[in-house]
Amino acid sequence: MNTMIGILGGMGPLATVDFVTKIINQTPAERDQDHLPLLVHSVPQIPDRTACLMDNQPSPLTALLRGLKTLLDAGVGCVAMPCNTAHHWYDALAKASSAPILHIARACSESLAQQGVKSVGLLATDGTLKAGFYARELSAYDIDLRIPDPSLQLQVMKGIYLVKSGAVDEGGGLLDHCMGALLECGVERVIMGCTEIPFALEQVHSRYSALGMDATEALATACVQWHATQEKRGGA
Image (cartoon, rainbow, N blue to C red; front, top):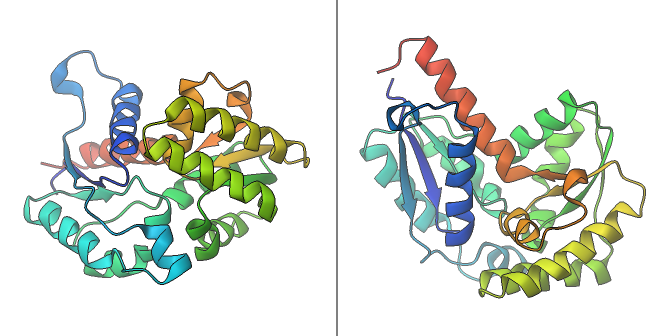
């Protein structure tokens, strides 16, 4: 099996770059040749995932399948998708893929379970909350989930779209406030369940970083582990 990892990105571009950086930082490399082989498909011209789920706007599935085919045709052995909301279409993509697709919420849930965490909050898009896949994955590990109330969720969405528009400091400051508010509800950790969130909170040096669970980081870890497993099996 080819050990190259395909990245179905562009949702958004900053989040894709952040994800690649996290993979590189986690790789135990002493030289260029020790790093993971990656093929990045970052084409942002994909219909908005949350708009589709919340407002019946055009579906991104056709564009996602097109990007997936590009990666598969190039011979990748595994696919990762650094966009939480896009995992609503995970089953359809997995059915169409000849290579395994790593699941961001599953990787996050496994990591939390390994740490013994029993209660979490979730900062994510409206679309991710509606899709419900975090609740399903967390429940498999008996981890309780708390989501923001409607007024706080409005601020979460504002912060996310500020980051997407390039106003990273302003969006990060608002998301930092949202994380603090969710922690006050008594959860042990808060999942940063939108790929823009950990990037933005890092930029503003969030005081809550130690209590955040970076879903992007968990997916990057899953990529590194997948590659190591294939190498041990003698992957090409």
